[in-house]
Length: 169
Image 1 (cartoon, helix red, strand yellow):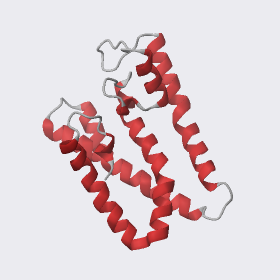
Image 2 (image 1 turned 90 degrees about the vertical axis):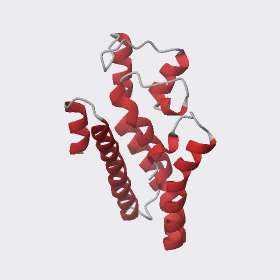
Image 3 (image 1 turned 135 degrees about the vertical axis):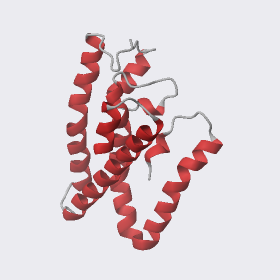
């Protein structure tokens, strides 16, 4: 996480950007691990998956909606470039945190760029948890190979597409 701080505090350079990207990847891997352990501890409790999704939604969306709404209401943009949403679709995408899925949409406030990836990770974690519990080591190996190959395949098969798979590993 220190790498992300360094990237934001020092003048941009390619090595710093790479270090920042790896810092974000490490954060996602750590978050996934902690949440999977949490699911493991709660296994057998009624409403596990529903409770997981509700907790994640209340953790992310209220503050995100406040940030997007404040940015729009006061025409605040960070970095300091003026950002005008290209359409209502772009605003809705930012409110729902799916702007990385749309080709012509970007984050209204640039620090929000990673939240769509986090939301998509949350959507997949219970599925991964079930698959890994069901298929144990064979599933884990297949899932790892798939997750590492998918971004590469997307890059070559669908150039210039939104990189939803960019942070899968």
